[in-house]
Length: 532
Picture 1: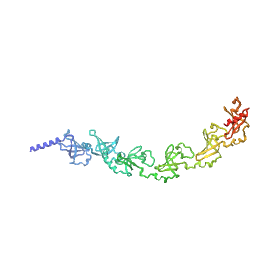
Picture 2: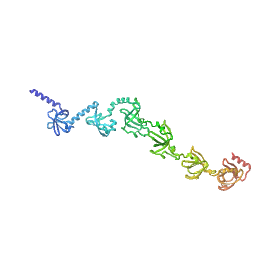
Picture 3: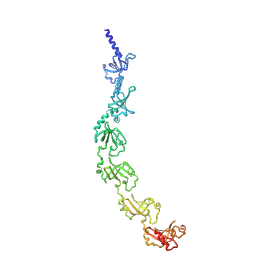
Picture 4: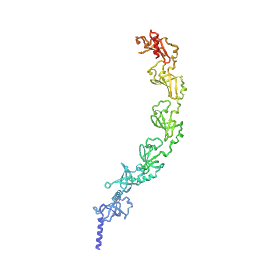
């Protein structure tokens, strides 16, 4: 009997030795108080745990088993010190370490956004960097908060209680198999759902569920867009068409506009040449304005087609971006996707009635608009200008400075000489307002006739004289007496006697002589010299 008692005591002592500080053991609840729970772990004394350490204290009952941590074998009063909460943490950390070692996934929930990523509850608080997160989480964070998500532990520091998580690592694990499977499912012309993963200047990358496809900017819309972000946003779910597949290079080309019919296919029926349209100005260049007739359909209104009458230096003088304008369809190039538009065709072309309104020979009044070295431009009406060439200003007088004769804005009388409506050119004259004095000279003046004339100009080679209004002649220096000082003997405005040597009606020239003596032979030599 004594031997049995000793054996039992030895076993009991041995059981005490097997339990040590820091162990997680299973105990039995033997008493539940208002603030404390008494647990028997089979040691020489029971342990006491504060009731707050139990998550659902209302459901506790005597006889329940619970795991606890042995913090101290004996305190000052001889009681065992236990902790329910620390036992759970230790067990959980042991599970996390095991999951990290065996590369198993853990389950958790998103808590909140923090700098650089997200806070995740996996039993302890873990960190999910943005670079390791799935883009769907970023786009739909609010909808993902309450959902259980799978994570992989990529970094663990048990001492610092630091856990770094990744969802990207989970996706990469099955990415190759999923990609191969998805490539087998894709076919050209197929409509697939995806979400915008990235936006660039040249297009958008769309996640099709494991494979990224490129939606080029030219395949987003039939209309004009300056950047993909004009119509798409990051994380947006869209339906796209598979345009082409390159399995060797792992490339998929996508299209969005291809889901709707090409508006250019029926362009000649909707906008035939000569039809009147209404559209919005969407772009302006130095050479014209682009007008949107409908989404995907734009026409070019060249600067030359904006006005019959105004001299336009830049299209912005007539239209602005956003203006709604009316125009006429001038031409269509369906295959090239081009439409030419005209705004001036909505008005009457003033040049169509120019010949009717201003017949050749008509005397009219106009406004001097521009003065050049070769003539004067005169506005006959808005948009219709004519040129008075310098040779048509006077029958006799020529000037090198027309600005002395005319000023911009002057109203002058003119005669219509000729009209070229096709090239929009009108020739005008001022001298034609009076008769040509040279037409009567053949009967009025003869060779060898003595005349009285007025000195009007003195040069080194001779004297210019006026026989009558509009009729001038030249006395060459050879037709003056030898040794005469021209400037002393002849003064501008004085009248002198002279003899006509030769009249050239076609060339509008009269040669005269002012020699006081001479013979017939000299006169004949002068005539021959002038003729040559």
